[in-house]
Image (cartoon, rainbow, N blue to C red; front, side, top):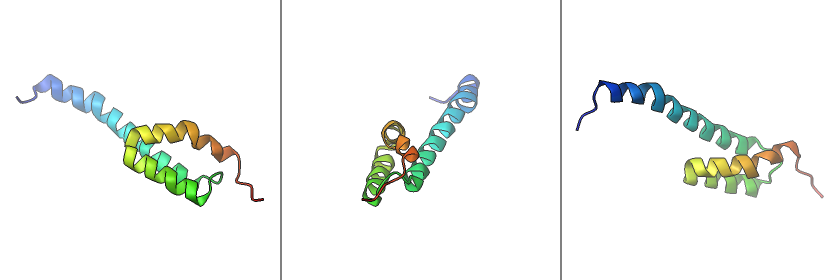
Length: 77
C-alpha cells in the first residue's frame, strides 16, 4: 500500500526531524566518549563499542553513566 499525501507530510515534517535529532545525539555521544578525559583508554573503547553496537540505547546509557565523568579528570596514582 502506498503512502497518501497526509502520510508523506507526516513523515517529512515530524518523523524525519526526530530521526535526525536522534542520529545527532548518537554521534554526539560517540564523540563525547572519545574526548572524555575522565575515562581510561579501556573504558573509552568499551563505551565506544556499547554506543556503536547498541545504538540509541547505548548512547542513552552512556549519557547517564559515562558522560558525567567528563567533569572529573582522570587521576593517576
